Length: 481
Image 1 (cartoon, rainbow, N blue to C red):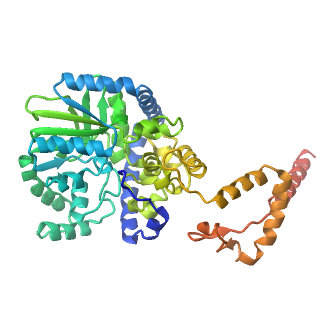
Image 2 (cartoon, rainbow, N blue to C red):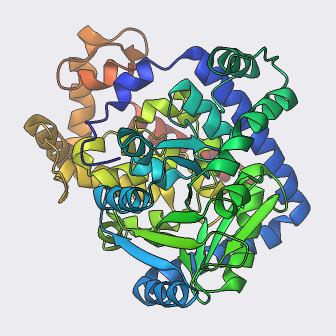
Image 3 (cartoon, rainbow, N blue to C red):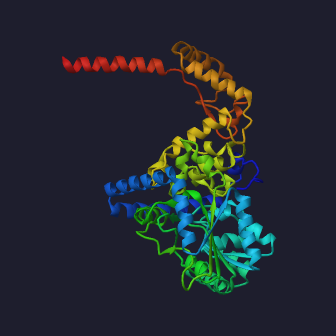
């Protein structure tokens, strides 16, 4: 998601979605939703809703006072022997990391799963400098071997079956791998163990930054996070500025929400807390605080709530669109409902203006979101920004579409014109109608029918409602007799 990102064509990407990828995606998301539902039911619905509300309030409070808490983080990290670097965009963040690696003659890096490092295209930049970066999360390790990007923010390889992973290991690792998850995990463990021991630098993201102590919080289920941030002599954490939370009490609330929403567990297997340089750990700790458009998002009173996201992936698991097209259709680092919000906000609707329309607005994502982000509301807001012309990377909306939208507003706002339009619609659609559908419309309306048929205009609602009202009134009269 850098300044070189090409315009995203969600429609075309969706057409090219592999049926095998979609099937594997749906199988994985169903499992995740089932586990989540079970652990939330055990927790208790009323308590869960109270916890969600608390999580929302904590995240909103932190965003509202972000300047104060970021200053506090810098002060505490520095006092604990760490270094804080500020990156205004992806390029600056890459240069900071590359500069640290070059100064220390780094040749090998082990990485903790980090979506923000994907956001800034860190791995290709490292490799261009002759530095090998090894992804140590099992899912990330798999997609790195395959030369792919993650297709889900918490389950990077959920689009692949165990048979595909086994074949990949046979090809890339030169081993005889069977499609048994435990054995595949052991193969990955044996391959990565020497890299942990020999790495010159460890790189991570961060789930949260606790302002009161300057503590970086990383949650994993595999233990690779602790190895990557403990064994190498240098640890660099690249973290979005929105990940700051006030205190440890806030962390306790958010960890309960995160674990249940990500993996359907009461708590993640490993919760790692890092405060600056500590005895027995790396000799250097560097925290890179990344903006990359987040300050701009914060200025939008409606869209800013997208920054509340704790990257649990629950919205993706329940989204009917994501489950029909898979993660790669979104053409960017963040997919599903969160990607449909974040990508246009980070890149501008000129490059990603189609993504807010990649939603049915059914609201299932908002119902599951652990921090109560009003996702459909934000998507509608972004659609409006796209049509009216975004202030960041203004899109080129065809003039005829704008004119038709204005005409539609006038017609729908006048009972007389609406009634007349109904009559005319029934007449003019006749040559195009096939049963209850209009399979093909003339330009520019054919943008719709390229993907799906348009329902024929019936125009009989007023008459039906009038007759129904009369029938109800007649039935009520008989009841009183």
